[in-house]
Image 1 (cartoon, rainbow over the protein chains, first blue to last red):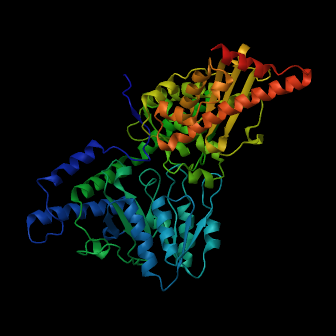
Image 2: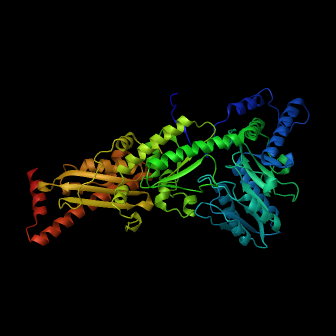
Image 3: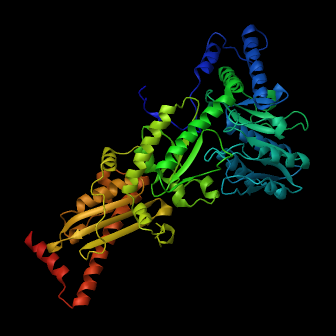
Length: 407
Length: 149
């Protein structure tokens, strides 16, 4: 079968809506268009029933014991904001200290920065070379003022899976709340709020083959009952935690996407891991001077983050323009700063500039992987033929020993 | 990042990629930039009789704009005298390639590389004169070529 171009290998950024998800959603745009908050007629009841069913599915998806613990939001950025600001505000008399890590998503980091301006104190934990937070660091950062720990389930750039269960044990024993941005990991690796001792979790539909603009925040209701100050005033929807008319088609799609992963997630992850390993094996076999960024074993199934030394990331993306990937290179960002995640892992700026993130997913095929491997190998070699650094490397010159004039 | 057709053309079919013998006394080499900044350019010129640049080669580690800027720079250098080469400005490169503001530094780097290659060539000539005590041939040559035009 002929390869269809372009090839999508950026599943961490977003995913296409699964056709089965779309089918489930469609009736809720027209024939079942009611407002879930309308209590007085069948249109409202139909919508409310669909939302109730979705809540149950999503609770099951993340191992929550009560469907009322699912609070629908517009997505993970909003969920992160509500969780962190909502807890900080509600528990401000108890303490003003929050612990997070330096490699969190900006929705967490920038929320924490805003709170710092308001007088809260935030500890940003460092990570090891694989991008992993050490649970012992969490334990030792806790003070009598700590109210919340926020650590992601898995990192979006390098795919490193965090020891959430171990961190959950610590926060439980100290009576501190644990929030986890579970966006990248949920449905792909084991995640269970009860088993892992998670009190708040952010999830979004568009990373799991659902639609954009819908997500949820898990808010634990017992042992302990988590309270948050709502960040959106209005009609008191979602148990008073998030006002705003519910996006019923989105919620139905979100739940259907979760349902598919409950049924097929394990098999899907196994298949994606084997595709990723197929890609990795080819690249490592045929190219020298390449480095895996992130953990060799504790890693998201579809993530392969690679630095191709002596080749700049943006040039690489241009060279493989028929393949959609991401890079940690500064040249791809508006800020001209290389990836803060790679930097936090101790990866030099030169290697950060050379990093490419391949994100494989549900619709990735073996043929696509082989095509991408061939293309990448060819283009890396071409760009290296053009790279003065590769020539120096071949001559045995250590690039790091050269005195470069920063500009 | 939306690139101009000219950047894409130079990027996909770069001109004058390669290496000249850096120990050749007629070759000037400029190596500018830094790996940590995401771009390193090495630009080389081979200067012939009359101070005319006979050949120019580059190798660049950098984004598409950096590669295109170096490709264009080498193309412009060939056939020019080193005095003429010195008049190439980054703004000319940026304009020719329609570089977006965020990529202007790539053209600056190309200008630096040209200047650095010329400086290296001149330093070699100076060293040669000091070694042999000969008359300043480089200056005489470029003056001769200027008057010949």
